[in-house]
Length: 77
Image: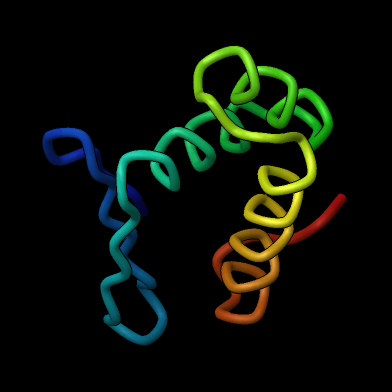
């Protein structure tokens, strides 16, 4: 379960009762991923919205995705 609070997102792992917080950029990534967009489309959208290199952004997206996957909050399709 996830909720947006201001420009951040809070995710609750219902199984463990643990809360996780995402900063504004992580929250935007979460929003795009939760819409079912492939990671390449998430990257393309964020490149249009933020001043960042593709290499840095791809690394950030992959790190966040792996952290969320490791915690059981997302699964990769």
